[in-house]
Length: 591
Image (cartoon, rainbow, N blue to C red; front, side, top):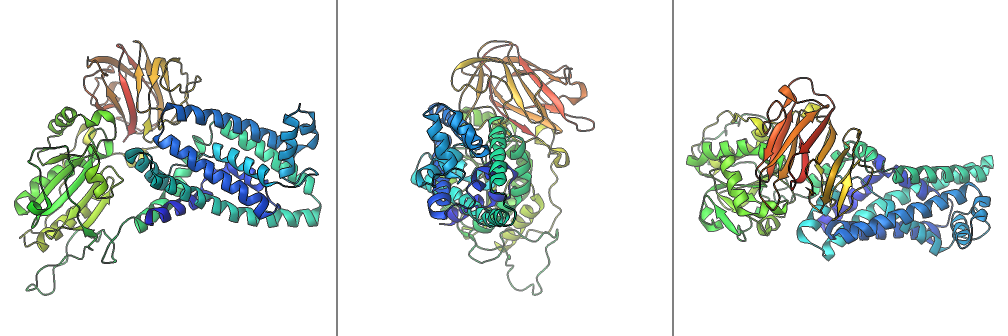
């Protein structure tokens, strides 16, 4: 029930996002029409269609992607006719039958013709709107879709998506109620009925143009994330946690612990009890340790760290987790890394073993390929840290990077509560270098970008993504955060695979660091590549995995740091060309 409430509130917040703008003209075209026969069917059709399409997109294969592409094309044509019929009844009458009937029905649905509003016409407009609706994937929708991808198709996924769509429909209904009264007042006082209808028609055509050009999922989506993500995150933080004590799950931001007034009393942390920790059963294998059970860990303070080895946010957290494991091992802290894969290649235990060696991880790691531990903790994030006290109760959690001082203070509190003689000390300051170094948050204007069609966005090659089939792509000058392919590639759900040598990837980015998850493909042979920045060798701006001339080699499937700007951070053109075929490219990340 909590997740349904979160999903509904997240949908309601989309009314505050700029990415909803292209949809508003279709909705406001219903202003002044009967709610039951006109507004309600349209909003219901929009919500139901969005939930269906989003479910298919989250768990379907390439056939779902193609079906949605055809549906969007049909919806664009349908709504363009709708906008034209609003501009002038004569436009609809000039179209050949049966399109004339369709145009007239659509015109009648808005009250612009002589016919009456019908439930069928309103529902038809709602279905078309639902096919085009691409709301910003903020934290809440991201949570829903991530759960769908991990757990597969099920009724819970559909209900959550319906709740999200219903929230958006509710906020749109309120906006329509207010807008309808405003339009009605203008008609009565100024006699502008025809003019208002024509303005709405122009707005509908403008919305169709924005969606057809992809601006709803690129420019508007980026603006929307900044405007609503903080609100959605606040909803998640308020409703996702389940503290039993009623207090916040994070400790005070002060750096020092205040000594108890009565030193004779045992120390008791003010961290709330969030519930009993679930079992660690379900791992397919344990590395650096034999399998650990809850019974074996009783009496210890346990830090459970969910991570996956190609995730840049996880990589930048590892130095702190590693330092805590070393600093507090003798005082009763047990650190357990739970490796829950995001990509298929991260399920290969040999790949994880190599990553553990590269990152110098000595604490136990549970390989959670089936997401058994992930689901038991009801987790939804990489990275995610959970602190368990000596009684087996979860007392603290933190999602994502950062707040390292707070987390370490929570560790110290729980160790003292368990009877350890832990003394107050300065927080660890790891000597993180290369890809493990913290991000330059003040200069990041580019976000994580997937190259597989399952989650691809901002693709700028004019040919468009062609799922699961070899295709020759080209790219010229993408806009900021746009990217494209050159050469012959086969784009799969999770990655793009180069079929012939000489192909490349171009990305217009703005950040200090650029990373790209790459793999040598099924053959496993090393693949040579060369990087250019603004058409030149990177020189001092080269990343840890290439030299100053931009040369590098893909030897394993992992995250490669390709750019680290040494001077002022500015928008740059990144180009990578591969001298050998077979490379698999998964995702860009930035720092």
